[in-house]
Image (cartoon, rainbow over all chains, first blue to last red; front, side, top):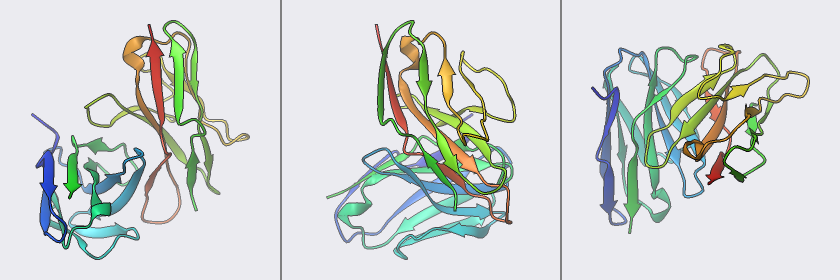
Length: 112
Length: 111
């Protein structure tokens, strides 16, 4: 069974659209994350949730809104997509905020 | 503020040669350091963490607090080691820990 699964794997959309990426983990972890990997392969944290509560919110445009309906799920909704949003978005989870992260396979978002 | 620096964006070695991927960090307290690896078309995965002091796939990394470094080493590189390697740090202070990644080093092991 996949430990951290995110859908879709690929997402191609036009500027101005709204899209969502879903993430689920079956590891029983308390903490979940969204990371963005840009074209230069640089990884940057966007958000972190612990037991459905937002604990880290980096300087991300408010067009990005995470939602955690329960501790096994952390979805990412993006409004009014821009060209610069094109990247690979990784979901991850960890038992606590100080233990190693388990990553999903990533969602490659392309905004045209 | 915490920062992780990987000075080499690209590193190319021949099979059987020793390899060292450099990582330096900046953090005022006692950090926890990790190495993550991303093979082509695969997810990021943990390679090793400094508190485990173990060798994974022949790789080792020693935390040098004096030099604030956590270099990743392997005595004899293999072609299957070709991947993107990220050094990462978690700080020990505050209630909200954040894993900060370096910019990554792409290792290519040539036959």
